[in-house]
Amino acid sequence: MKTGVFCAALLIGSAAAAQPLPAPASYPPVVAAKGVIATHELSLDMAERIARAGIEACRKMGFTTTMVVVDSGGTMKAFLRDDHTGPHTIALAQDKAYTALTLANRFATSLAFAKARGGTLGTPMPNIRGVTTVGGGVPIKYRGETIGAVASSGAVGADKDELCSQAGIDAVAADLK
Image (cartoon, rainbow, N blue to C red; front, side, top):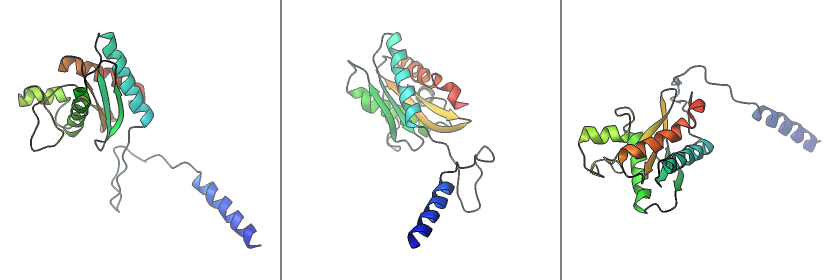
């Protein structure tokens, strides 16, 4: 008898748990009375599609590159390093993406930040770890919310790296609306 009641309760509980969560009532997210904020996150699938599209765009321009996609917390979500790309491009792409994410509310891209700061190639900011004055990083936005960033390193020129990064975002633009 106890087993039958337990199984019935388990079935009822699992049916309730299987129901989809309701969509947020509004955008931007509303802060709940208990301090809960609804946010959006970049999926692994989208991050991989962005990185792959960036690699392909760079190849069409005749460059090999490293692509790094970071999530909204600045953690690497996707990473691709094309053939014949220097090992230094790994850390630099990650720093460019982190810079674009960190400064997304003040600068359109890491190149815009680099120009505003007047930094030389790769000048680090000693007071913010991982932020660099090199172009190539672009924030990824969903309905005005920054959900990550992508960066390219290796396309011989920050402007070219930025084009590769933007091509990655453009490949998923329909999904970001």
